Image (cartoon, rainbow, N blue to C red; front, side):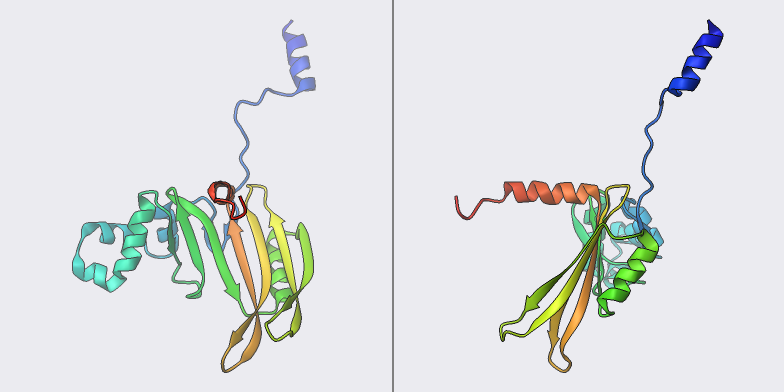
Length: 199
């Protein structure tokens, strides 16, 4: 009987006792889903939460009241926006329910280069397309989009857009967003609650 049972298990497979979890998507030194304290530690500011919670007004002024307010809100589970000092000042992280749920970057590098870097890091894009963008004067540009769906449910989207700067005129910007499956669920829930303007 013992031999038959072992043989049967070797054919059918050993019963799963633990669920396999996809490895969290990593982006610029951070991991989607990492905790708020992990985020600040990896950002080189492991003491930030303690300083902000300590109430030392001189230290809080040195850091910034807004940064402290956001960091403490994020630690308590509220939705907050912050950044990693190693990133560009326009890049931001979204922390919600005590963890990193989204990251947003903007690049003035050519769209093709940004997508090439993403492909090298995350593999081939699941979808790519080109569309026409037009300004109020009728000028048109072809702009690209590309998207990835990672094993942990994180969605990566690269979208090219045209921007205008007074001294440089029109220029291309590529926005790259990483959204965890929790953030996608949150955005879908918000959208479902939004009243329809035509009902």
